[in-house]
Length: 117
Image 1: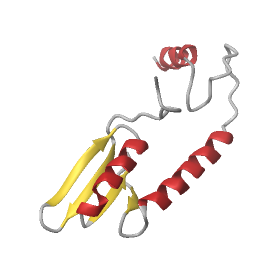
Image 2: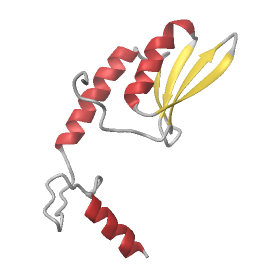
Image 3: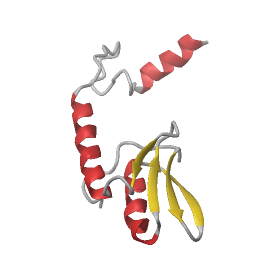
């Protein structure tokens, strides 16, 4: 049995947590989602000098020196909810209600690959 909703966004480890310690140096942890990155920061923030979350583009999106992780998580969740309400209009030729421009259904993905060749 699952506990509530599971994350719908999964990444290939391109989200990273950097733990900076004055004594031991820098440790980098690959994470499969922002939720996992937040957990790593919460678990380690008291034992390191600074903790950072780095997105897939290499942009630092969180630094513990600038903000508390709980505050950042609250803002991140609110923004994620806000963005999920405003979805780019996309008319699926297969009338699949769960097909969006940035998250195509399987048939549209196949069409996109086929048309690309």
